[in-house]
Length: 122
Image (cartoon, rainbow, N blue to C red; front, side, top):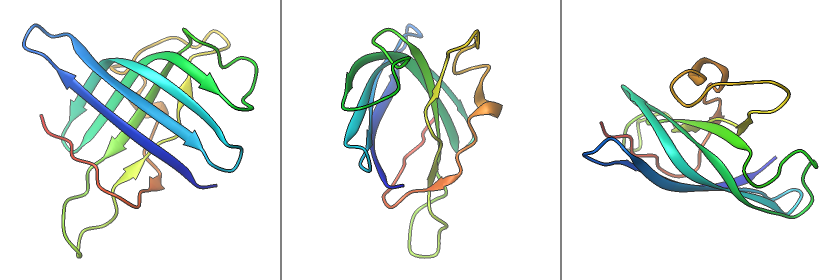
């Protein structure tokens, strides 16, 4: 399944995080927008977390505004010889799942190769 992902996240000097993520499932013409408020950067990987701010299209009924979710990206370098950057699926915190971007990284490995570029900077 092809999807389109657009995101950014910035950790400010006071420690707060702001950003957004839009995950568009092209096969079903559905989208989820997160307001990002959590960021964990380790090496070339970043985990973003936040709350669903907008849902459009035909998605499962448990995906609603306010639901928490996490998403992980991996920056594999630049240039023609670099392997593709990778992204994870969105992991929604449902059915008694708890945690945030700092604790759920192992559950959201970035497996999907990306046609595009991810820039992870500490």
